[in-house]
Length: 245
Image (spheres, rainbow, N blue to C red):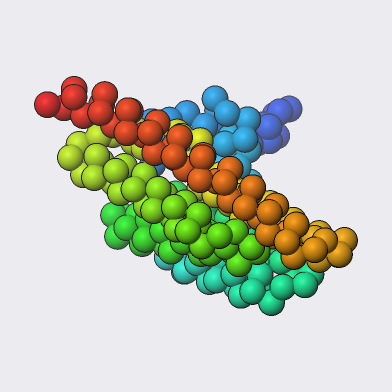
C-alpha cells in the first residue's frame, strides 16, 4: 500500500510528480558519487543515468547485488573479446555485447543507490573491474587488426589517466577532477566502432591489408584521444591539488 495521502495520489498530475521525484533522486545520487558533477548539464549523461536506473529496478527486485552486476559486466566484456577473436561476422555480435557490458557498468551503481548498499568496497570493486574491462576493450581493437604497439600505447595512457585520478582522490581531490575526452564512454565507443567495422569489412569482402589500415586509423584516433584526456586530467589535477596544499 502506498504511503502517499489518498487525495494526493488521486490528484491530477500526481503520477508525473512522482516520476519527476524518481528522476531527480537518480540524478542526485549519481552526482553525489561523482564529486558533485550535475548530469543534467549533459543530454547524454542525463539520459544514460536515467536508463541505467530504469534497468536497475527489476534487477534490484530480483535481489542482484551491485558486486554481482559488476562481475557480470567484466564477464560480458570478456565474452565480447572472445567473439571478436572468432572473426568473420562474429565481431558484429561482439559490438552488441560490448554495449550490454557498458550498460551493466552503469546499472551496478544504480542498484547500489536504489538499495542503499553503496560502500567503499563496492567502489573499489567497480574501479578494478573497469580497469580489466578497459584492457579488454583495447585488446578488441588489436584483435580486429590494429598494431599491438598502438594498442599498448592506448592501454598505458588509459591506466596513467586512471592512476592519476585515483591518486589525486586519495590525497583529497573531490570528484573526478574533470571530464576528459577519454572517459569510459569513449573507450566503449572505440571498441564498438572497431567491431562493427571488422564485421562490415568481412561482409563487404575488404582485403586484409585494407582492413588493417582501417584498424590502424581507428586505433590512432583512440591513442590521440587517450593522450589528450591524460593531459586534460593532469592539468585539472594540478590546479585542484594546488588548493589542497
